[in-house]
Amino acid sequence: MKEVKLLEKYCEYEEHFRIIEEKSEVVSKVSEDEYLCIRLDGIGLSKKYLKDSIKDNRFTGLMWEALESTYNVLHRKAPTDAQNIFLCAIICSDEVSIILNSQTNYFEGRLFKIVTTIASTFSSFFTGGGFSAKRKKTEQRIGGSFDGRPLILSNTNEVSDYLAYRFATYIRNKNSKLLRIEGISSDELYSDKNYNNISFYESMIKELKLQEKSDVIPNEPIIFIPDSSGKLTNYRYESLNEFLENTPQKISEFDAWVRAKCA
Image (cartoon, rainbow, N blue to C red):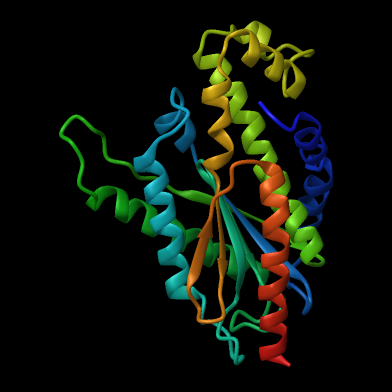
């Protein structure tokens, strides 16, 4: 595992965003110049489909297709020249965070309506794709639903910090899962001393010679940012540092374009 200190820094944002989520849950409308993040979490999907694997291309492909389909049917729900309500998104395993831009949309900022619309739309495309996708006879169908939680973010810096937090948390949790799969006992892995302890994970990965398997984990999350033509462009990175060097700038550039079109 690389970038231990950087991963620790962004994983520590958990409390910050937990508080934002709690405050956002009791808000009825999103104000202009605020960025609504809809965090979708698969209900029981990780345990059902991903419990004993670090990577599942079928599952990731369905998440990707569901996000693109959700974007295609909803992104133009805006009375502005930008013709886009989205800012960016990230897929991490069975979780996806979709962040809307801060401009006017046809939902009139109604938080409950936005969250339920996006959660139900994504769930429909995910299950529809999973049941219609070609598969081997021995492979089970993939389907399920996603709950939705709102986080109201104040600016693009906070948006970038949130995405970095999700990215870092994914890397931490996948390395923990790697160690479990490779035989580290639950008593040791989930003890008060070692649970979510990135330094411990690093030392065990070195000891068990799992560096090669660990090094590919940061390449799994997928970041999506639209461009000025409306195309949803996707990005993958080899490290959290590479993510930080590229994503915040791309988000700021698209946000600036949206603001200019809506001025």
